Image 1 (cartoon, rainbow, N blue to C red):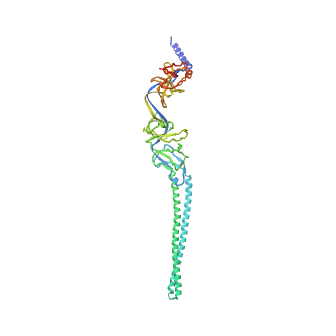
Image 2 (tube, rainbow, N blue to C red; image 1 turned 30 degrees about the vertical axis):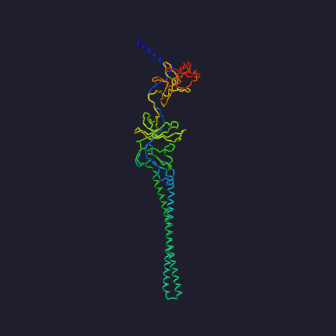
Image 3 (tube, one colour; image 1 turned 180 degrees about the vertical axis):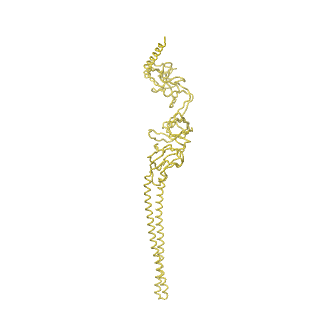
Length: 450
């Protein structure tokens, strides 16, 4: 046989193999399904929740505290630097809307001018009034001196004339004393008026200064160095350009302490009874699925709340991040596995292998060259595996996919002392082409002993 003949034979075999692959590879049998081995080892029951990283401590960057004193209870963010920016003390962070502050500033400026005019007018009026009162005192003093002189000259006059001059003198003296008292009252009245207008002017000037100082404070700066993280509204939305800040929640941004982090998560009301402080937690990062961090439940809320986009009540659970990692940043999404309980040296299979038919749990188990539906008792499950208490042995093979043809597939049922589950004979007859033989269980219980 020459080389050319051998080459033709090899090519023919390859073509035949390709044809067989194209036309017969789709007819898969049970063996072609994905399988897994029953393994024995540690099994943990976990509660899986999503959460968000945040710093344990942070420095808040807030809107000016003078807003409330200025009668401004809401203000918008006009500009803010990018989240994640690193700033130094005194660096620019954001600017707030100046419209309302400028409007009130102009109003107070006009009010100050008005109060200054009132002050000047009152000062002028009181000065004129007191000058007139002093002039009257001078005139009454001259009148008294004249009467005194007349009294001295009437010493040798008739008694009646002398008495008349004496009365005129006393009358002038009394009038002068009355004018002195009136002048004192006018001075006190003028001081009171000036005190009032002076106080009004000072108040207006102080209020104007509040707005002048507030205007400069609308440029928000960093109180210390760090990384800028946007503050959040009550509904979880970040405060960005256009967001409104009120005086009861004045945060603009935060400077978190990245050395110590924690996770804020929310557990539904069904699982919250299983969560206790001190439980171990495995924390995964959506940004880096390969990285796993250690954690511990720090606090569990005692009152539920309704979160946005959730139909049921949830409870806040705070998880302390024990692992140190310099790459962690606030607002990173996490997947947290809270360890509820655990079992040692137990049999487990992937959860994909477990099927349910009526009130029975079963797996497709490889039995020699055939496949049987093996009833199992599932003690517990987690997101990956199922703990099989009865029905399987270590090393057995189970299938992870549903089988295409189960009509002729036999059942392998457990003893009724393990299941206490009654099987409907008619239903069994429909599913099994060759019913399994009855065992020692008796009654309506079907037992297949391995």
